Length: 108
Image (cartoon, rainbow, N blue to C red):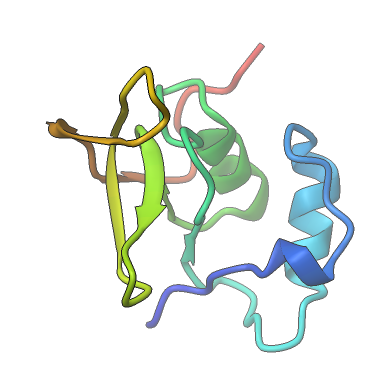
């Protein structure tokens, strides 16, 4: 099943509130209950106690999230990497999308 990429620009969502975001995702046009999710939001997959893990637990689906900053090149392709002190991508500090499965560690 294809991963769903929530478009939070068109919806009300508080970045650190899993309850609000899970409800927002569930009611978005195009989302199918049980569909895996890919978050296009920096550092949401930083640790096992991350926002992504909490969202996976709440929605009972796999959630893929970047463990560093999320960048896009001039062609709209996404990549995950650290950030230099000047605000530019640090290509030597590569990151990745991490899968968080339901039932993992909860934050708090």
